[in-house]
Length: 445
Ligand code: FCB
Image (tube, rainbow, N blue to C red):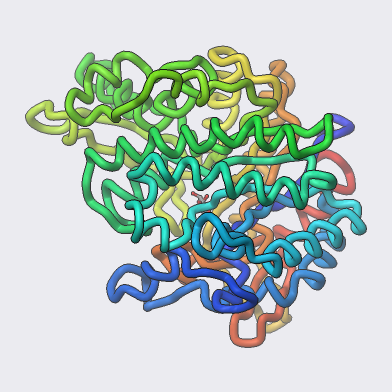
């Protein structure tokens, strides 16, 4: 048996828009995802988060489910439009009440809340009035939101995550347009990356001021090891470029105080506008980094050598999840080691890791998902190897507690270790969920 450290935080993760539902209740304002889902052709099957897992009404049952699994920590996000329906200004106390009830239920169950402030559901008003993340004003609105939330919850929440995957907000939301708000504008996409990071930095001291002294503040990034398809310098440069955009563009300003110079030079006119002092704000010291790991990226320089022509290579003999993501557990060890060696980060958490496979409810009433179980086991072993190498990895959050609204793919992908039968909202623990429960109980694999 491979044991994990005593205090290792075994957790599960979710996000507000993906599970809550109750999108029009108790004064919640519209978010950019409500609008995006309502726009024909944007989301598979016309699905939306209007009902989702109905967690807003069933949160007690869901906390009980977590208790059954024995998880020690729960990472969830707060819906900004529930708290400030207009993005800023008037506070909706019913929204704050909901999260206070949730946090109290978690604490009663001895489950530590890890609260993400922004997991992609920007108030639509900010999109309409100032252009959303393309505007500096949104960064200041975020700071206001962080202040309101932490004033209310700071006496009991001790782990704050400012943003989830700003790279996805910036590029999937504004460059490829596959996510809300659905823009396709590379120039603005790079600008949004800067204002997202500014928002992060502005909120860090606010969260500390409003919370208890031992509170820890961090950010969650989507990170991938990037490999070169061949040893040619063309492909190696392509890999460096992809690494620059996906990883270093976010890691360097947060943990080193500046954007990577090779990227800034390569971007030319696409480089974002910044103001004096922004770099210092963005680099305010953090207590931890949350790592979301799903796959590696193999890069090859495509035809003509143009930066946009970089291709992603999918090895033929590899295993893939239903997302088309390569199953590559070794990448987690490699990534964690690199983060530890190249950046001075006091503590790391895997804030998301998991897999979508086509699950079905069997005749025996159970959900048998051996591939997800293997996926979790292999990735946990890889993470454990990183700990053995000295990486200060303090916890792991399986994505996800339960099947939920998978953004542009709607309900067509299931990531849960708990199955959700959407018509009845029944939750059924999958084999992988029972395996995770036993792993937590044994504190090892
Ligand atoms: C991540 C998101 C999370 C979920 C997983 C599958 O990029 O943070 O909400 O959709 O992917």
